[in-house]
Image (cartoon, rainbow, N blue to C red; front, side):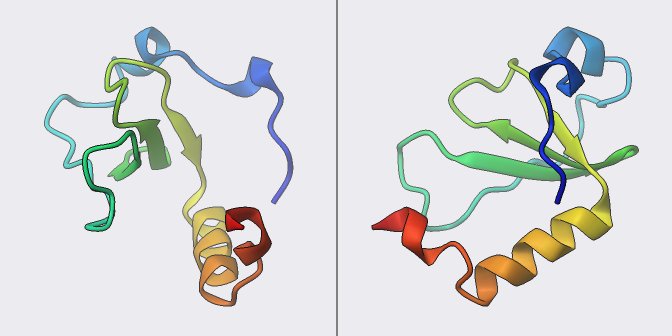
Length: 83
């Protein structure tokens, strides 16, 4: 997955028009009460945001890139980041 530059991230005000208020944001059941990453299917792809800042920026990635990331997580490719 290519690295995104901060200039490629869109702020929530930029995303408001294309991210409907009725989008069903989801997070892991293991999340608890701390800030978590939430995901949702939106028109442009898969949106990711910080649950502690729901009005903050939304990172949007193409569905194929998100699938590749999820497959990598399942394969343990990022386990070293959690130690």
